[in-house]
Length: 350
Image 1 (cartoon, rainbow, N blue to C red):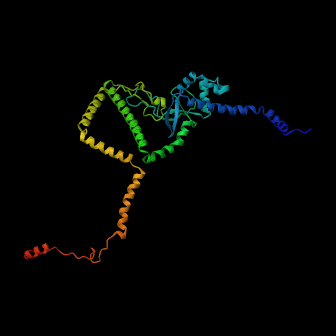
Image 2: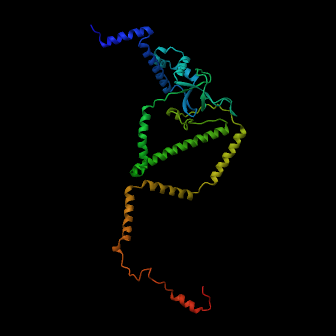
Image 3: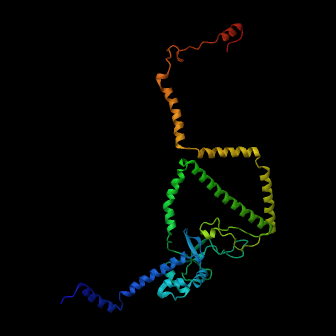
C-alpha cells in the first residue's frame, strides 16, 4: 500500500531529527523566548513605576533608567516576571544581562565625571551619556537606555492624524462666525494669562525664598519639562533642594538688583493716558481681525469698481474741444505781472 504525502514527509524528517538530537519543538520555544523578553521590555518601559529620564547619547535622544531603580521596580512588581514564562524565576541581574544580550538595553555612563564648582556630588540624572565599555548589568551608578522604538499609543496616532486638520482650522480663523471668534479669543487669552501668571508667581516665590532663606523652591517644578507626563506636569510640591546653600553676599547682591529693577520699572511706568492709547490701539487691531469677513471684503471691492468704470467709460465724458485741451493752451502771463514789469523798468530782469 502506498503511503500518503504527509507520511512520506514524516519518514524523511525523523532520521535527520534523531541524528541531530533535536526536534521541531525547541526552535519554536527559542523563538517564543525572544518574543517574551521583547514583550517584557515593552511592559516595563510603559509602566509608570520605573522612573526614567531622557538624555543625549551620541547625538540621539534616548530614554534611560538607573540600575538600582530597575532592581527596586522588579522587587515591588514581581507579577511582571510572569510574562517570561519559564524564565520568571531568574534573578533581576540575570534578566538585565539577558536584555543586554538581546540588544534591548545598552549600558551607558555619564559624560561629565567631575564635580562642577559649587556642587557636592554628581548629577543624579545626567543630560549627556556615552556607551559603557562593559555591557554587564550593575546597580552601582549604572545607567541603561532602551534601544527599541517605543510603540505609540492610540491617542498619539489619532493626534498625529488630526494635527493637519487643526492646522487648517487655525488658518481658516478669519472666516469663522463672529461668536466663534470671540470664544476662541477669550479662551486663548485666558490660557495665556494663566500660564504667564503661574510662571510669574513661581519665579517670585523662588526669588523671595532664595534671597530671604537661601533655599531653592520651585512650585510646579515640571511645568517647563519637555518629557513630563500629565501627572508629573501638575505636581505642585517641589523636590528637595540638593544643591549647596548660596552665600549671603550673592543673596544681598541680587536683592539690591531686584529693588533697583522694581524702582526703575515703577519710574518708567506709563501713565493713564498712554495706557488708554495703547489699549485703544490693541482693541482696534482685535476688532479688525474679528470683524473681517469675505462679504465685507467683496462689498468694498464692488464699491470701488463703479468709480474705476466711470473713469474709463468714454460715454460719460464731456466733449472737450481740441483747442481747449491743456496741451494746446498757451501759457499767458497775468495782467498784474505785466503792470509790475512796466512800473519798474530799471529793475534788472531775472
